[in-house]
Length: 531
Ligand SMILES: Cc1ncc(C[n+]2csc(CCOP(=O)(O)OP(=O)(O)O)c2C)c(N)n1
Image (cartoon, rainbow, N blue to C red; front, top):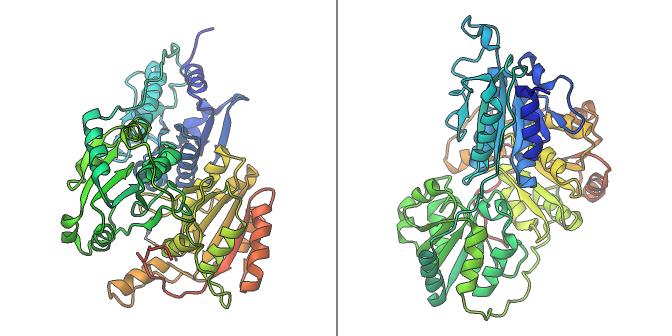
């Protein structure tokens, strides 16, 4: 039987393992979606920013590229914030969008996307509207390869609606190798520096989780007796936060960062930018940091870290090679890290909520965080264990966590996903809850409701800027919101009710939501030292 663009594309997607499609449909996508095959799962998101965030979570948790289908320019427009975040997260996504029929395009039609390939730039690695309909499957194969090559990220293909029915040939596609071999001489130099160093630190970035190298990096830390620090604004898990050598979270402010690293004579940054900064405080001080090496698969990020001596390579090759060059004898491990102090049970605080979640969360839970002013409470009281997973966004753009939790649960249904989300952040992609309900996913939403944008309150105080409008957000009833979308929900106003509400939500069959009234006390930002 003669293949069409549609059948050749579906065949390719099967071979690439992309049979889950995250989308929101319109008339320009119908020719793809009609007679939807039984072996494909269409995951409907009710707004495109939620669609892409779900796909981002799915791709991160499954470790492979996810497929997205959006509706022409308006759908891509809604999705742009999440595309920016996926780009910063270095998540491989093949994003497709419908385009008006080629036969109409010259007439400036309804739904026609002008300069469609330009619209998502610069936050896609590659963008294409194939010159001929029959080139669509090949464009998708190329989009997949480019998305999955380091540094991973989203790619974009715009597809005119009349292309799908046109004849096309099957695509011959052989997946390329994705690993980048580091320069052995440069690795020997790092091994030499670590070997002679008296006080060494390993800083693990999000690349460690992305490459699934948590165990190997932990073995390296143990082998050399280094302190293990989480990179500033870490967005994935790495060395377990209850490991005896875990030292804490580096701040995203250059002065405090330099202060934390001042006592070391050798620092090795693995899988992350060196360093992701948020505020400029003490910028000149980073010049006085100790010798810094980094191993990353992202040459552009390496170039933006002038202080570090960079080796470009995959951690999957670099870390075992480095371990092979080091002394065989590991220094003894100190006793396990002391458990964090128990927060007061007098009032209902984010600290107390984190403490209770830490106690009752399954030891293989996936924790999602998007509660900016409560980051340090989480870092103090909810240490991510060796079998747990952690996801946050690397971009600074809110709207990722709530929907990413849906994609993570779809990819790893055996894990309980616990999404800890601020009331402000929740409202950027609350539509994700509808999908979680429809798909019956084991996601527990914990909404820390402080009646507004706590991080903005904290920044205003830090920057001594007064009377800022638009940061108090009262009057949202999350229990009713969740109920309207079919999700069981409860609200906690007293410390005594916290544990039972959380236990119920964490053991629920499908999704559940707990809204916790944490009060509006202004949190301190960048106090990231563990207690
Ligand atoms: C898309 C987007 N819009 C606005 C901001 C600015 N912003 C940073 S933190 C924040 C408040 C978030 O509030 P919430 O989720 O309730 O967490 P809290 O800060 O109260 O802990 C806002 C609006 C942003 N980072 N991203």
